[in-house]
Length: 170
Image 1 (cartoon, rainbow, N blue to C red):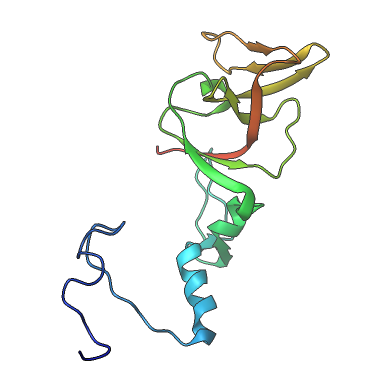
Image 2: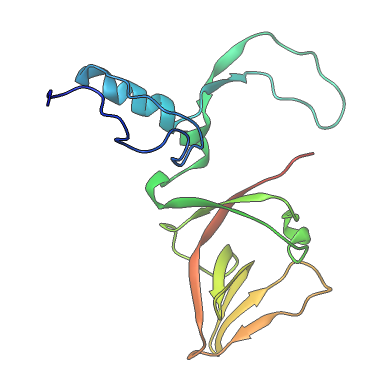
């Protein structure tokens, strides 16, 4: 029996991995691995123009680019402690959070009154404005059609993190 090489029937069947298609191994010099990690983990930098866009009367545009923004660095204060979660429902429209939005949530920011948080109540996720009171926690919707959620001091609520951005399409 020969050693090495391809063996019939060995390995995972083509297309059965998590990508649903055949994959191949790629060899890289160790010195290039960090560059590849940076490419895979971060979005490209985008140009930041010096002249702001007017939301009132139009102004003359300038061609000068002031710099470049890395969205990863700009949007994530604590990348290792951040996650994304989609929104379903309209209880937070008054805070500019709409159904279909994607929220950026930071677990490293301490939740405090007035912050928009993602919480778990009885095993279900919700996004609400946090209010800490002497009687416990209240989770406030930003839509008058919904009542506040009062949580007694011994109540079952876990704050997963503070919402830092809501991403939605126009």
